[in-house]
Amino acid sequence: MALASGSSDHPHDWELELTRRLPLFGHRNWIVVADASYPAQSNPGIETLVACADQMQAVRKVWAVIAACKHIRANIYTDLELGFVEENDAPGIAEYRRQLNALLNRSNCQQLPHQQIIAKLDQCAQMFRILIVKTNLTIPYTSVFFELDCGYWSAEAEQRLRQAMLRGPAPSAGSGSAFGWKNWFIPIWPDPSEACYVVLALPLRVA
Image 1 (cartoon, rainbow, N blue to C red):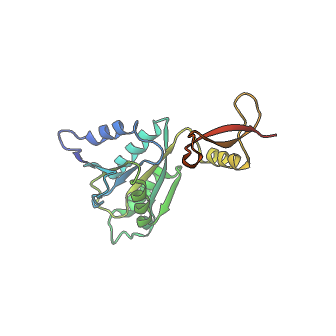
Image 2: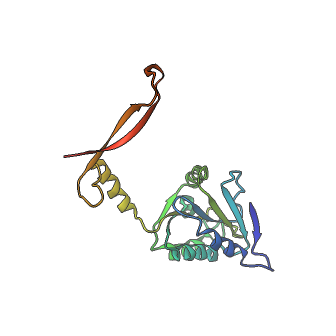
Image 3: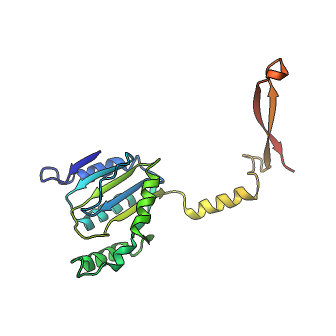
């Protein structure tokens, strides 16, 4: 669904739509602030909002709204090509880079080739929603990509969790004892040749 917003009658429609969607969004959703030539994609998981707004203003707004949410945070990506575009080929690119660097200098911002970022978006859109906010900026490789992550669970905590799971079974609640699990296959049909089985997963104490 594409919504034409940012018109003279309703200049902030895209901001309202963004605010409405963020409570639904979470880990693995994406929000993209894109320049004017960003294509309409055929994947139904990708939604586009047309915002007749300044690109830098849109980036600031999206980042501020995400920062105000307790349940999400953002990993930010920009096109690697952005750093190589020359002013003679794209007037205004130097000033845009200066403003963007000033805005994102303390963020977890990564640069990847444009096609690699698009491939990540396409893969995620197979299962998760992606929101594109398309601005009126006519300078190439200026899109900013916000990959949403869990706001109350860090990558470091996830790594510690996975390492703990590899070390062995978790302790049972309240007792501090460790349990493993054993599957028991129990026939429930009188004729053994046509037996159906029910699987019971029973705790097995680990010494």
